[in-house]
Image 1 (cartoon, rainbow, N blue to C red):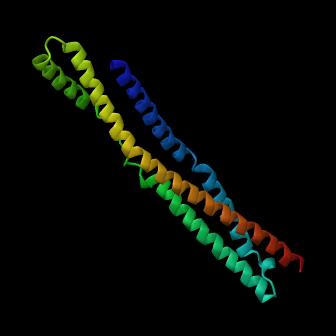
Image 2 (image 1 turned 90 degrees about the vertical axis):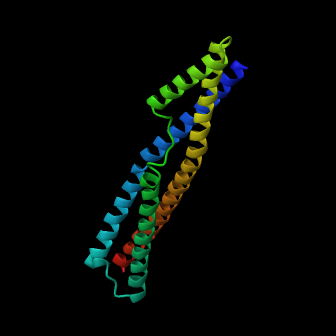
Image 3 (image 1 turned 60 degrees about the horizontal axis):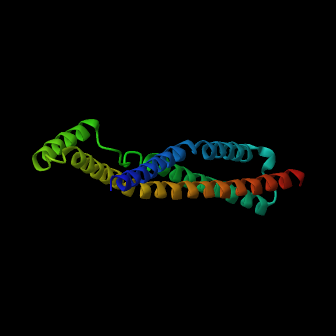
Length: 182
């Protein structure tokens, strides 16, 4: 029985560490979208302020401004999604209880096992501690997995918006080249 509980604790601990690793990975993956957004803003600023890009053809000028507005909208959505990834759930993570709480639980279990299981005190105490550890891991994993899933979805949406914005940026670059050639 003790081996199966130890194995269960090991599995739950691995899942807990996996979710904490996902948390760190989400936070460290914010650099690329922010860099791409900066590049998009610089490109849009250049196109919007370049006087040689103003076309005498009204339709080309309208398309240019539609693309610029589209890039700003996708960039705003990207920033909202990145805000959700980074700040949205920052303090919502479940972590193990504080050391003082674990120590107090241990003291309570110790006195309980001495009182009720004097002949099998050591094995009963170990069994009770394993049960508490299982509950701590279950509680944390049950709480952290959906949070990471929400952060993962928000990061996916942010990357999707960046890709759409970059596509519009490439269209704007092509349009700018056509306007300068005409």
